Image (cartoon, rainbow, N blue to C red; front, top):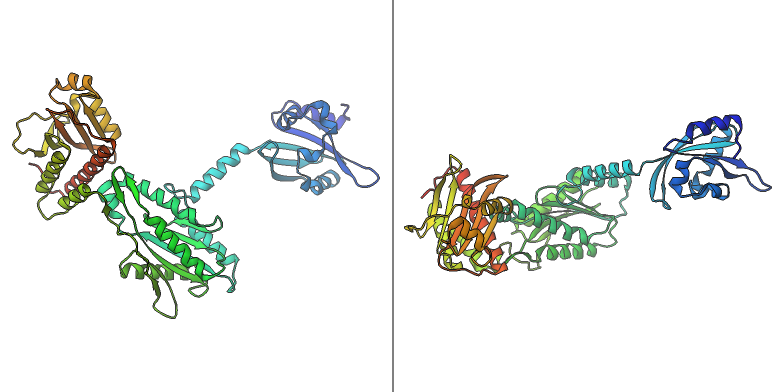
Length: 471
């Protein structure tokens, strides 16, 4: 196409640039002025998928938003420079468009594809606003959004609900199963909570096992009761970890806007008072703050108890470890119970010593056994396995070569669990059977792993208290 001298300069500057560049002009007809392409560089044509032969008959609005037409005319006629962002649905890209006047009556645009930067910024924004574990809003963002909403919607005619809740006795899950399972459980509970509420409601995790929900524009008060009932029942549904079922309950405090407060601090403090009242009355219920009374409780719903359930062996080990006997006796009894239950000939707990290739015997069953202890380091496979996956289960049927090469056919069945905390290895809990190739089902193996982890966590807590547990 033929360009005048000034436009020829623009052509020479931008034809070979990687950034998209186009010039369009104001054309006049008998009705209204309109825009038509005058020039586009190869980067522009490639970005929008246009052939050079089709450029002159392509409407400008195909590439650049028609809602900015007034802006283009202003640039072309006044010489003012403009910049805006646009998401083009056809090419699915975020674009930064910079407009200026090369000569009167023309508008030139530099179009920069900022999709990658935009997505990164959005990702960073989401990460800054989100709780890293659950993906819900974090405490700061939750507070910020509720405060912003209340400030922008100051009317006493509306009804909103501030809901705070925490999980009853959640510490026992972390104590007996460890933080990895505790985190997995929190993630599952968070997903259940989020599924109950509208996308317009604000749902956040404000503490370890504490959550806040702000329900906007509630049509009637019964909705709050139904929603909290659903919330409590949904959280109370069982969580299965191998062969052990857990039931979690929650205590909930609720403050209703505007009766219980018009600002964030008042609503939050009153909801917190209601939460404390629910816990004071025995947990596992919800309580609605009422400024004219001490509160109104709704505890006529029967929920599950927050305990380990439906697994007699897990309950038995839990009682053993919680008894008033010495740690040494508790550990020895727990090892004995597991040996008898699963058919192992012997079991032991060994603590990593100094030098690193030596161990100290913490507990053993049978106590006077003359059998040699099988250490994980005797098998590279076994040692790597427990360091990476916590446990390892070997039988003569499933791993005959490993057992024969490492232990000279002394054992038919071996089970090991690594005692570790924050990537530090402290020793192991081991069970073996020299005489029988034990066939442990998958669910039983999971159960054994969970219970052995309970014993390992108990041992680590005793060590943190500097109590002697060595045999």
